[in-house]
Length: 514
Image (cartoon, rainbow, N blue to C red; front, side):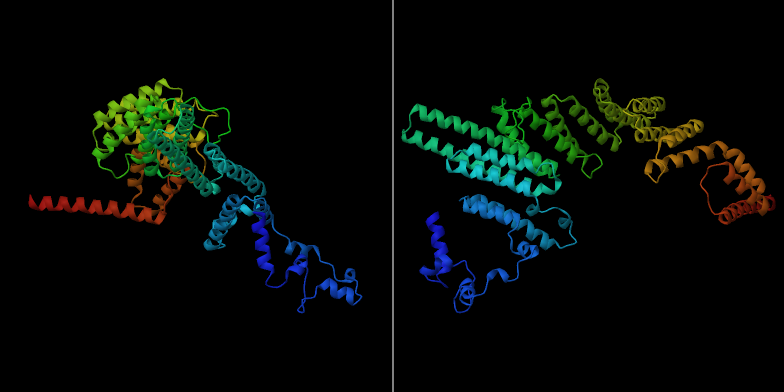
């Protein structure tokens, strides 16, 4: 490497200076090829009296941190490390330029300014390069997986996480296939002793395990970034491979972490496959009922294999919702009961609330109003058990109960009470829940006063002054929605006048006919 570097330096300098002058090639030269220092000495000029470089001048010509880092890497002979870091920095810079200054990329700190991260990347890339020279594929994989872990927590580093997870997969896949081919070839040629075969077989099994881990990490990344179909495909492939390797545990993305989980990886695959199917096939999406039920029942099978009761409950919940949407309420109620039973046995209050909500809505569909009312009341009781008396959830619970009373019963006094309680917990802003509660409160209050209020309107319909007084009284005493007074008078006066005329005309016609 040193001889190549010298040769490169010689080639670059030989165009301007001969071999004799090469040792002074770094000096500034004039057009006649004389060095500046030589000219100054010949003219008896002291170089010290020349203008000194300012700090800004020095900073202008000084190499930046990442440039110095890359130069040091190259000088130490780590060409792969240099190429990888250079390409990442170059790619990021081009992406920023292409996106334009107004792009969000310009608000993100670039790699060139993240000095500590660059140093850590350099260290592990150099380690990986050293291990690669000695064919320690597992160690190369671990160094790159550690790098992937550095980018897991920062959403702006997702592109780097993706690059290194894919790189890890390629490393172990290539290494596994290579060692597998070596063993096959040696056995075919009958050119291997037992000790050597055992060593190669052990390496093969280790790389196979690492391959499964790499597939898992890539599938998890795809799931977390919303690429559900690709993630589902990888998890299913991995799940099939793990049928004969059920002793492999769920890996951490930090390969140097001593404390690993005790959860078998095949169980994790069952659970993740179930979650992805539940995410894709939502009841409110535009799928045919048969397609929904087919996929959701598949999710239920994976949940049952994993023995995860919460997932089993969620599968029953979504299947129940499908039947409810298609108005098969008896079947929906049966599955909702199963979801409810699982939720009640758990310690998850939020899950209990969701189960009661589903049962309450289906009981409404089945006209089981007493059961529905009890479901909604119980939701309020459960919500009060939440940590710090969750006001947002409480306002939602009271809104459900108020809505139930208004649409299904004549219990407007209870609807008004539920609305008032909900408004006490709701944030005073234009949220959906707050506006809904205001609506239920207004409706319930108007329903309670409707008989008296309508009589007063009828009595005042022919007198404009009385009508205005009535409206003022209403605005003062009742928290009903305000509206344009002139429009209200016009509508009520015209409607009653029109109705009176129709009745009078009908009576006249009836008299003439008789």
